Image (cartoon, rainbow, N blue to C red):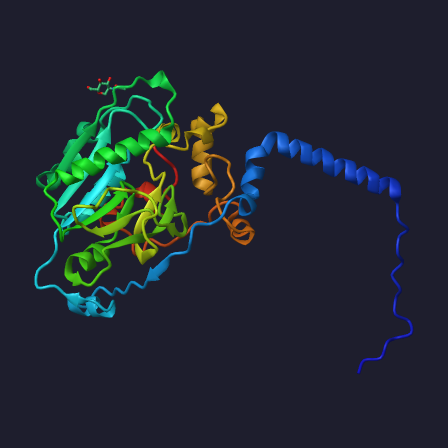
Amino acid sequence: MAKRSPHAPVTKRKPHRKPLFGLFVVLVLLVLVFAIVYHGRKISYFFRPIWDTPPPPFTHIPHFYAHELPMDHHCRLHGWNLLPSPRRVFDAILFSNELDLLEIRYRELAPYIYKFVILESNVTFTSIAKPLYFIDNFARFEFASSKIFYGTFLSQTDSKSGKDPFQLEAKQRVALNSLLHRSGIAPGDVVIMADADEIPSPETIKLLQWCDGMPPMMHLELRHYMYSFEFPVDYSSWRATAHLFNQGTRYRHSRQTNLILADAGWHCSFCFRTIEEFVFKMKAYSHAERVRQSSFLEHSRIQKIICRGEDLFDMLPEEFSFREMIRKMGPIPKSASAVHLPSYVLANAEKFKFLLPGGCSRSK
Ligand SMILES: *[C@@H]1O[C@H](CO)[C@@H](O)[C@H](O)[C@H]1NC(C)=O
């Protein structure tokens, strides 16, 4: 046992200083008022865990994959059986302006997809007129032309009507549903429902093609990246789904079941080659109201944010618990890994430099 030294130093307590304390309270209040005035939105997001309830949790279907194993082994690892012949897989997406990711998607998946169903509109979700980028750049997708089933959503409304972007988005998804039903799909086929930047991995598609016993509907858990594969965020992307098609199947992009297949591909948000494309997307997508100041669209600001892994809209992480939110605050840490990415990206690493570690500077 350690004995207490009789000469241990005694720390003297300072006497309470009331006036200083008062000043401190006033300062705190001032900072609070300032924060509420300038960051009201941020504060409301900070308290999200209080005002919003999280969606019910998913039940994860474990996903097994090793590249040298045969298909029947992969099926059996999932408790499923090898089919005598593969199912046809349809890929149904809504396209806006993600040209590079669309090329990567189609190059990566073409060997396994029976038909690429793609819908494009001449207006954004925010009712801004837009070129038909897919048609204008069709040369890039020519290689898959025999598999592409393309449709347009031509909006009659003019841009001044101030429509709810979520309503216009919903209308475009209904149009995609009818396009899908005209694509030649039949009961027993598989359909992937996703956005252009939500890319299932080839091994996920092969599992859907070849294994009997998969659930009739499941979400696909995708690795979420921001700006490029240099900034992995987490595994939070869940909106993409895989369905065994029947006549009742409807194209949707929302929560449909509790089942989700783990680690099923990549979701690269705002993964654009040029700053102009960032600006377009920021103005075009359903959350365009997040552009609260015109300075948010300045090219130099956007470039700086991309390289730092910060938030384009200066927002807090959208989380349902304080622990998760605090864990995710601040910039996304850079990753130096380019392992297990779509192989077309690495096969054309020079062309897709902006998606790889060290490539954050966008071309002018
Ligand atoms: C979209 O195309 C339709 C049909 O060609 C046209 O009537 C409409 O004005 C276009 N919308 C915009 C915003 O250009």
